Image 1: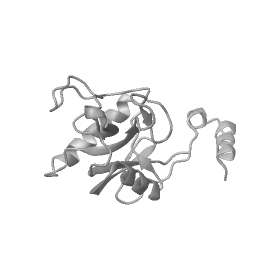
Image 2: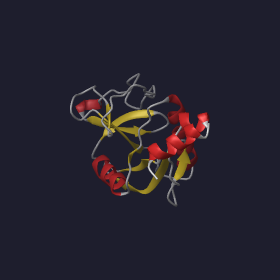
Image 3: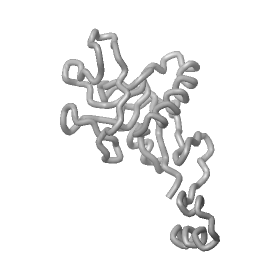
Image 4: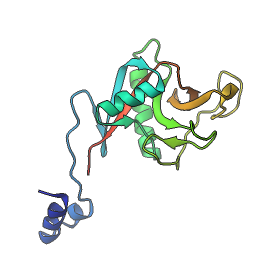
Length: 165
């Protein structure tokens, strides 16, 4: 049954709340964690940013994009809980980059950043991200906040799969 038919059925039956929020959601695959209309998968392997991007796409998703404060709060809490169990998990790739134009951050899904949560105070002495340290940091990681990092470094990564139509 198509989404349009289901939405029409909701309207006909007077299920206004269901009609207003009419979307079909799938279940998360095993090993993925659901939040809202997305599922998240934390990779226990380390990859460069571009390989992490490809791995997420091969699983039907994309590197995680954090478009709202609510989504960022969920992902930050989720990653902190995982990070505590990793001896070397300081950096975790997310789906942001400024590869095409310095300072013009985009998500792997093509959207410009409309929300940011850059961490303040880095090891390199700069006061705020993104600092593009030595002109080499063009990919987004999460390390107790958002951070620009060198894309060819290998880190864990977080995939996202939008499960609602």
